[in-house]
Image (tube, rainbow, N blue to C red; front, top):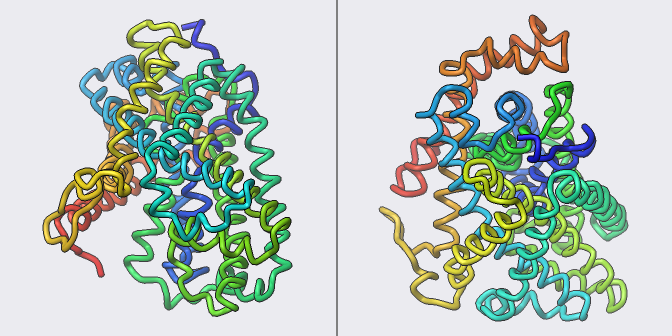
Length: 464
């Protein structure tokens, strides 16, 4: 296992793992979940879930990875629980499926960056024709997958860590610059007020449910990415501190994304904040027009920076998504890393072709399946997201919690976390993680999985 490589520093691990968590979901998913959830009240609920639910699961995943120094499938086997390796295989499947469609969306973001550079602000009005253009989007997605594979092929310290140390500070610099500029726009304060002043009457069961889902999914939990990254962490590293810093970085960037986005929405709506929950549609169809209104030169600069930001955020996530199956092929099948990377990348790109075709290019893939009780068909890309991202990730988190508490046993988890953190055993944090992994996380994640499956695929809504 010595040739697997590893992170050269704690900072490198935190940057890479935070990059895994920070993605398109932070920059459009989080702000517009906030918009749909009524603003600041959603933010409060989201933050609570990040630290009560997500942090213990993250610590557990990193601990399992560091203990075994293996990929998610090999990790469960190495801990003496071969039957539990099905959880690792499920995580592997999720990573492959999510990357297959995520790469297509990343292609959209990169394509928009190019279009903004060329001053093509009309691209927003032609979003449907853009996404159905297989040659153009396929070309952008190919460039994106090639970039992802190139970084991963260079190894952990020479590729993933090195890229994260460049991409993450650049991403933060761009988002802070855009936020500062957004504050100068007309009606910006109305956007900030909507975002930061809570109206707790807005907190309903759906808001709580969505905040929980957003918190869990945005931190890359449940699919083995952090087990994989944890397998490259040194035994003397403090897992609790690292996990806390990763969570803070992810939450911080999502929070700043809201500070950037809502002044843009306020400017767009003259302060009314109508349509603040439109999500991806607002980003790809409306914002180019906003950038155009800033003038040709400034519009090109701000617009291209915005979509470069989206592209960088996507790249930090695609790198970690690719590393999960690559680590499996390297560890379990003893394939040389560079060969494994390109084999897996090509396979995932091919798996992503239906998603590429499901946005208007093919009637079959664009109307792939009709769920029970649904009035209209769902396209393949959305179906893949509903299965892997929305359903199997919380199931993975549920099973990982159950495994750590009742199969591997809590005292073994505590022992592993104590390495590199001598004061952990017997501390308040240790007791909290014990309770969270044993009861809180399984109960909430199990409930989330059941509610999601019933609502999404069967049209049965138990909370309204």
